[in-house]
Amino acid sequence: MRHEPQVNAGIDGFKKLAFSARMKRLMESVRATPHVRAATVAEAKAAMAVARGVLPGLMDDATLERLLAHNPDILPIVSGAGIPAGKTVFNGLIPLTEAGAQAIVSGGFRGSDPDLAHVCRPGETPAAIYAALVFTPAAFGPAMKALTFWIGRMAPQGCALFTRVTTGHTNKLVPAMGFLRADTLYPGAPADLLVVLPESGTAAAALDEKTMPAAAPALPAPRPARRLSVRVARNMEDVMKVFTVRAATYMSEQYCPYDEEFDGNDFCAMHLLGEVDGEVAGCLRMRFFGGFVKIERLAVRSHFRSTKLAFRLVREGIEICRQKGYRQAYGHSRADLTRFWGVFGFREIAGSSRFSFSDVDYVEMRADLEPLAEAVAIGVDPFVIIRPEGRWSEPGPLDRSSQRGSAASVAGQIRTIGGGRAQ
Image 1 (spheres, rainbow, N blue to C red):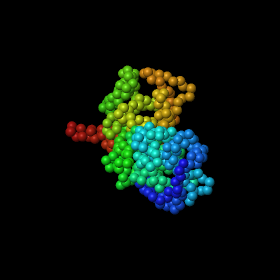
Image 2 (tube, rainbow, N blue to C red):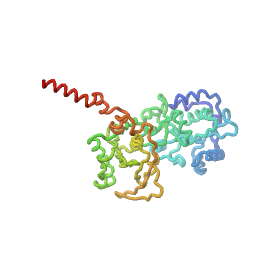
Image 3 (spheres, one colour):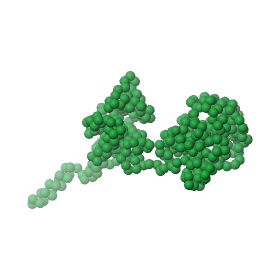
Image 4 (cartoon, one colour):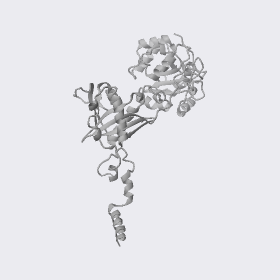
């Protein structure tokens, strides 16, 4: 295993990336610049053993050894100035081939057990870098300062830097550094993947094969974020759009019979209609009972499933339930989609058995809700209760009608005018 000497000179890789102003100020304020070099296999295994005590589930030693044999630069160790004595500080930086870059934005890259075809060899120009691990206890600033040149050494032309959030601390830290959710730039990317792109003006910033140097493969060009919107279906046209989405999803794709999909409950329920860039794309149905709300009939057209519309529909549906003061939500999840509903706090009901209808297996789930402080209830402004569903904070048509005066006053005016004409 070869060792690199101190890499504290050369290209500052952070200056090639669009980190936040806060992160750049931090880098400028750090005076100490420690040494950084590639770890030996023994050092790498020892460092990972320390990290596993904090972050269980990291790659095993056999995988680590295989990666280091392929590229010994993926695990740089930081030591010296600014690093507390006895502290293990290192990072896992995996340079990705073009195939690796494509895989990471499509969800096909395994960080804990990478395909070597996705990982560059030493000296190859990466299409992107994956920060698999940042382990810098009590030495974040100096460690990042040292790694600026390591990143610049890996990708002197600049490239996108990807990472994932693994702890509550990094959940706050990483966005503050300037990382963005990758799926806002690369539709269909995993929800937990984050990215910081090259700075405008660097060779890789355009992410365009026509402008990229031949030695630097390009990621697919980021597409503009799609515009999602959700609203309550308020008229027959909206309801027909909802029915169209459900027919395309449940009847066409799942071969659900008409009378099972349109079950007689649609005109005693609230429907949410979702659109993507103005195109009808999804829907959700909610039925309200005495002590709970049932959330059901979530559907998104296949063409729009790479967006986050399903999440948006459920979140806005739950918000309406909270505005209505509900404390419990209930639903029937497809047996293979319980993890999706778990994102919103739904849990399988203990002791319940699985059941089937329309040739699909289902699980009973429930979630506890916290009503909003301003939930609609008896005792609030009477006009709030008669406003359109979901728009309780906005004046409705009957708020405006109140400006005409009371019915008795209007009737009196009519009698006066009528009496005058009779005379």
